[in-house]
Amino acid sequence: MASEPISKLGFPGSSSHVPEVPVDSSSVSVTAYFTGQVWCENGLAPAEFGTRVGRFAYLLALPFSKIAGRLVGADIDTFLLERHVLLDYLLTRAIEDDGVTQVVEIAAGISPRGVCFRRRYGALRYIEADLPGMANTKRELLQRHDWLSDEHSVEACDILTDSGPQSVEALLGGLDATRKTVIVTEGLVNYFDLETLNVFWSRLARASARFPECRYLTDIYPDLPNHPLHRVTQLGQGVIERFARNDWPLHYGSDDSIADGFRAAEFKEVTVHDPDDYRETLGLSKFRYPSVVRVVEAR
Ligand SMILES: C[S@@+](CC[C@H](N)C(=O)[O-])C[C@H]1O[C@@H](n2cnc3c(N)ncnc32)[C@H](O)[C@@H]1O
Image 1: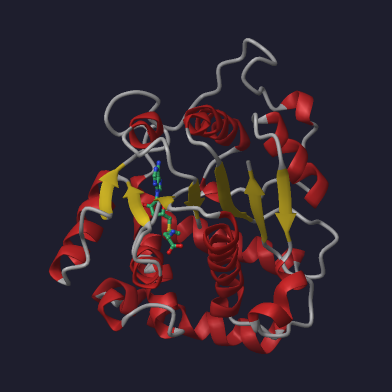
Image 2 (image 1 turned 90 degrees about the vertical axis):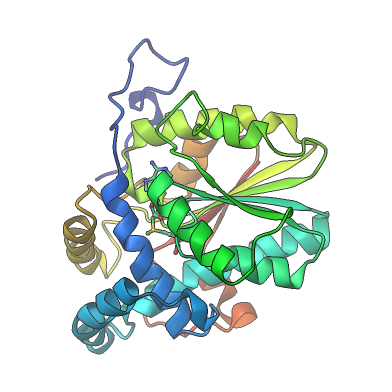
C-alpha cells in the first residue's frame, strides 16, 4: 500500500467518518507459535517456550527461510530478530535510564520478554495481554513453570474492543497509575489497516495519560517501493496473509510519514528507530540491504 496523505486517514476528530473495524482477528494467534519458536531457536527464550505447533511451523518454514538466506543474504529469523532485539534494547533503556517500573505487553503471544525482563529486574511489574484464547495459553505456560506472581500476570485484551473488561481502557485502568509505564506491541500492527490502527492508537494515547510517564514501543513494516527487497517483502506479505488468514498491509512510505501518522494519532513525541543504526550496538547480523522494519517509540 502506498503511503497515504494524513488528511485521508479519517483520524478521530478529522471527519465524521466511522471506520469499519474488523471484529475478529483471532486467526492471527497461530503466528505467535511461530515467532515464539523463532525466539527459542535463537537463544532468546528459555526452552520451556518451545511448543509443538511452533516447532512444526518452524520446520515448515525452514526451506523458504533457507532460500531467502541464499537469495537475499538473510533468513526469516534474521528479519524477525532485528525488531525483537531492538524492542528489548529500547525497553532496557527505558527501565535503566528513565526509571520505568511497569510494562504492559499487548499481543504478547508466546514471547519470553515478560519472563526475561522479570528475571532481570525484580522490581518490575509486567502485564502480558492477548486475545482470550492466547492469553489462556500463555497463562497456563507461565503457571506451569511457576513464573506468575503478583508482579507478573496475563490478561485478556482485544485491541478491537473499545469497552468492557477486555478493552485496552480496562487493561490500562487496572494498572498502578503512579508508575512510569511502557506499552509494547510486537508483530501486531501490520495485521490491521490504518483506520483501525489510528482508532487503537488514539485510544491507547488517551488511556495512557493517567501515568506519570508512558511510552509506546512497537514495530511496524512500512511500504518502501524503492527498497531493493520490495518484491521480496510483497512475497512475504502473501505468505503471512495465508498463514494468518488475515490481511497484512504495509504502512507508510517513509520514516517521516510514520512519525506524522503517530503524531496525528495523539502521540506528542515520536522517534522512528531503524535497526540499521543499531547493528553494531546490538550485534545484529550485517545485512547487504537496508532494513525493512522500523521500531517506533511514541509518548
Ligand atoms: C505475530 S504474533 C506476535 C506475538 C508476539 N508479540 C511475538 O512477537 O512473538 C501476533 C499476536 O497478536 C495477537 N492478536 C491478534 N489480534 C489481536 C487483537 N485484536 N488484540 C490483541 N492481540 C491480538 C495474536 O493473538 C498473536 O499473539
